[in-house]
Image 1 (cartoon, helix red, strand yellow):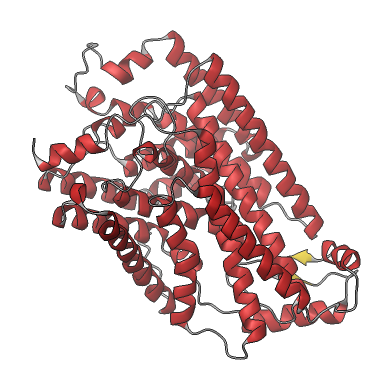
Image 2: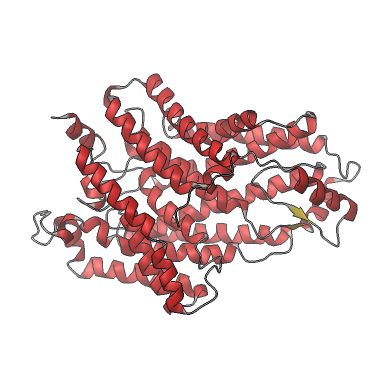
Length: 503
């Protein structure tokens, strides 16, 4: 067996893990983001000098990237222990901040909370959405290389037919996150006719066409290992993005934005009915001749082409979520209600997932069936609600510490019923002194470049090193070095105010 065949066999025929284990791992980054913000606030209060670019990068890397690497590798069986450490650290930092508060020092806690609930937040930019997209990007970057090493648990790898693996979440999470900030949600194409809107949407696809074709040519020319049942012979992630964008652009011309959830439910329900009562499922699994043929364009890429329907539904659900989250809200208490609604929806979807998996069909990434779509949307909503809740707690810490400023977090703005002098100082001073040194902002700014860079460096590592026989310490060092290099390049570009965009 050749090295290529050994690597392909190493990532194939996996059955995944439980939904609960994946959900536990997804919520941990939200705690890490919160701890990082609390540490920045406390250090600003204790130290007169602000952090330089090197220090801030190392802090962000230690809190955002290293926990992801360890959770997906050596601490995969100790996620609850990681939660315990993060909760203790976060609670300790928050307690220290509260004890050292420079505002409302003599006021009892209930009164402080009452005033805090009346404070307004900047609604134009939602930090949780940026964090959501960065967490997904970082998770994908770690996983695509880690899966080739023995220290990566096989239960986290992409499943062959049925089941839920941590890596199965990646594409769905990326599509959901992109949908939340799509031009339609941000009302970017509000002027002009529908034809003009469609033209602009089509024009924005050319970089993806270029990247998809480039990846296809590169993979085939160097004979790089592939997981054939993931997308097919020629199809890849970029082609899925192109197809999803094309279909959803047409759907959003026909249907109102605020009815996206109805479109999502309709597509998944009809698609599942087609899988159950037509030969569609057999086509995906065994091809047109029933023997797994790869002859012809459809047979060669049947998984990638047909699964687009499921990802279209996920995108439409992301559009509906983006509309809800970006809705203008006046006070902290309104955001608490929003988090409650998102969390409640996620719980409802997880209950629906259980019912569907028991009575209809188990989740399948290969088909992107009804259960898979429900799982992706529910997982995304859990992560989003966790990040929003963390932002609210971080805002409270900023509320009680004068001039506290954390990059990629909410700005407190003037509220007529609150302490005017205090809030004016928060707005003016924090806005003037807010640091721009932030790895989250850097990755979010050049997210596509970060993804491409991760893919290229993953390929270089695989071509240079025998990943299958690497020891755990060596693999762990290599993974951290790989992420450190990718993050550093993106961070330097951000410091130089560079955005790599071709359209």
